[in-house]
Amino acid sequence: MKSDAQLQRDVIAELEADPLIDHTQIGVSVTDGVVTLNGLVRSYAEKMAAEKDARRISGVQAIAEEIKVRFPSDPKTSDSEIAKRIVDVFGWNVLIPNGKIDVKVENGWVTLSGVVDYGYQHDAAKKAAGQISGVMGVSDLIELRLTPVASTVRDRVKSAIRRQADRDADTIFVATEGGTVTLSGRVSGWAERRIAEQAALGSPGVSKVIDRIAIAA
Image (cartoon, rainbow, N blue to C red; front, side, top):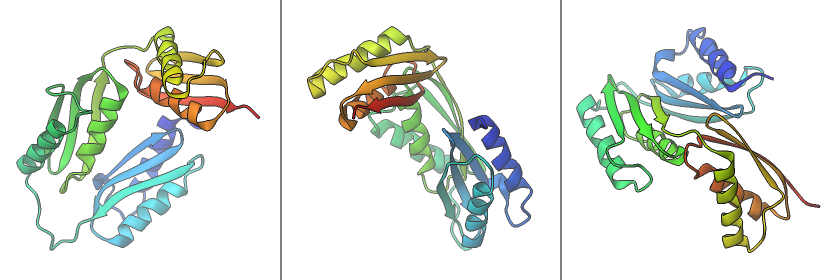
């Protein structure tokens, strides 16, 4: 099975090989085999061609297509205006820590850098920046300050399930590798599984959660 990094490289190569597409305006990210395409293109046909190229790659599980069409007649937004809008949105979003993320915009392309403590802060910043009008794409250089500790994540998961489902979570197991947490074991329902996943993702240093928890029959 291809890794997310290999899938990203393959999709980018396929876009570069397509003469119908300006691949420099399309960003590609991959999580658990799901490819996200973002950026701005000149026509709906180019947008559809990019999606078709991504679907052609072996190993792609799904496409999250967030490409927008910008017609030549559309007014362009200056880099300084885009940067200001992003900073303003960051200031309004309670999930994004103040003063922790730097924003740089060049020819409509946004580069985010800095250090945060939680994966959800990173995800919120990237999503918010990508939704600003005039943004061509987002380069994500945000780092997580901490490396998650399995015992800490496990305690948070157990506490969350006790609070929200009034159940024990002794059948859930936690493993960590870098910023990735893998959950396994068994719970009695989908609600508990979702609680565990959210609690793990909200733990310090966690950037990704792989949920392998089974539902008891």
